[in-house]
Image 1: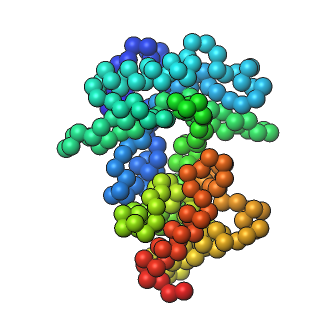
Image 2 (image 1 turned 135 degrees about the horizontal axis):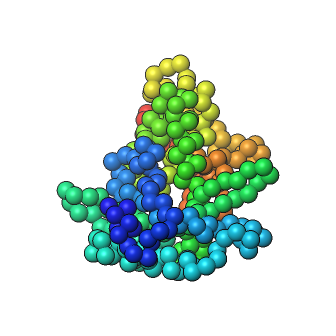
Image 3 (image 1 turned 180 degrees about the horizontal axis):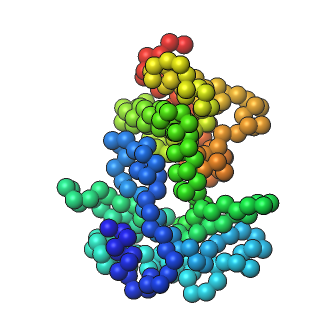
Length: 263
């Protein structure tokens, strides 16, 4: 649907644009509470980067961040009719019952980060508030698939369990609602050998929660080996994250009691 909107929009003709889903649906970690589908419309050329490389490589020519946002808005409006443009980062396409789910569409540029001997490719979106958000959806997808394969599909099973628990706890007012990606971040830091525990799936969930809580309460050890997102680059805590370590501890503590595990 969004691909058709972009393909038919004349200003996008001949451009190198990637239209792809991101988040829980392509990662196969979605649960019943994940109603929206997240789609990125990523302009690959010019790409954006950091520091002196910005002058040499990217952010040149007519495709400014303002123009990209406007053209994506026009493409969606022409195709879908009704589009909510009030969000900071994305455009919201309302659900049509029985036809399509609601869709969050993010206009973004290809982002390239350089390190000695290699480069990392992600995406950067610029909010209406002027702030930028850098994401690594392709790395998240690849790393998640690898970890899931290495753990006999237990990784994504535990992620879905924790997401469902978080949804229930939030709906009951026990904890505040948290982004579903937070659960995925926490479980990604569970070592493979814990997920491969020689026991039932219930035991695997219990030991995974125990391990996450150990890392969240590790004190100075946590600073030496910080938890990372499934993309393997961004730290789970700090910066502009929408959650804190306290949120993580409360989620795991209440999930432990929710499942009636003994201390």
